[in-house]
Amino acid sequence: TLASRKIDMKKIHFIRLNVLKLVDVLFMKEVLGSFDIIYSVGLFDYIQDKGLEKIFRSLYMNLNKHGK
Image 1 (cartoon, rainbow, N blue to C red):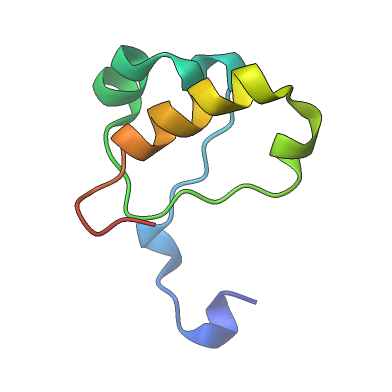
Image 2: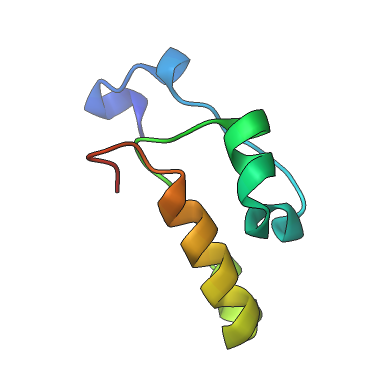
């Protein structure tokens, strides 16, 4: 678990939203801000390549300088 790895859960924010919002760079920057880490499990398996490219581009643009 995260707690057993001594990760401060107060610094982690889980966000639940419609995946289509992830293609909107302005929404991402204005509403969600930028991130150190973006993590997803299984989501991208179900999105066609064209949409996936847009999502990846938007997510990448919202990473902090050394984000992953």
